[in-house]
Amino acid sequence: MKNAAAAQAMPAGSDLPYYDDRPVAISGARWWFLMATVALGFAVLIAPLPLLRDGWGRFVPAVAFFAIPMLGLRMVAGRHWTAVFRRVGWRELLWMFGFALLNIVVTVLIGATVLKLFDAARNPAFALLAGQTGDERLLFFLRTLPQLFGEEVLSILPLLALAWLFHRKLAWPRSRALLCAWLLSALWFGAAHLPTYDWNLVQCLVVIGSARLVLSLAYLKSRNLWVSFGAHAINDWSMFGLGLWLGAGAA
Image 1 (cartoon, rainbow, N blue to C red):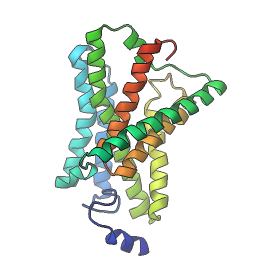
Image 2 (cartoon, rainbow, N blue to C red):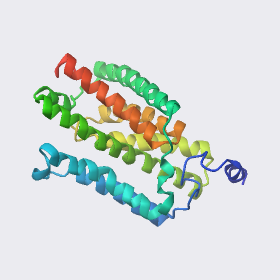
Image 3 (cartoon, rainbow, N blue to C red):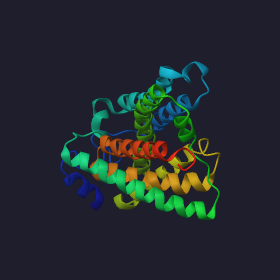
Image 4 (cartoon, rainbow, N blue to C red):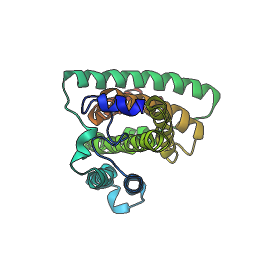
């Protein structure tokens, strides 16, 4: 009762959406439906569709990756589907760059530690970029934008679903519910990268998962999906740019 009273005392829009039935209550069945749309969007992204693997065709699965679950969110949350977004001003832009820098530092430190102890697979995107023409690289960087936005949807919607499960259904305190949702959604994100990194479990769960914790923290801090997406895009574009400068092997 104390947690519920505290939640009700918060100004409208000051807390994370959905997990505490505000600004709209989402039933368990609707959460399952929404998670199914998240899985469907991811399945379209990784499906081996030859006609959509070259040039502008590669934008189709990248857009479907986020469009399908966002349509699902619109169906279950109605007009409140925009609650995951907020306005972007100078403060939000600073957060984007700040969390991107933090993510790069965390990724480099943890990645270097893992490399000393375990084998690691290279991201094939670096080798792909190294062999592309200038126009092909431009398309690559542009295509990463819808895909990275999809990765934010892939992470944040399950985070909110888990927070709802722990807080509303299991009656956990808010802090514990959000902490566990934050950690588990990062593991889910890391596991989604297993095919990309030759099913290297340690690399995906530890290195990629740690990076996801920072990016999800950007959302938890700002309550704004644009901020975590911006930090993600700045981080990845910086990494890819550095990879082009150093060469695929060094990256």
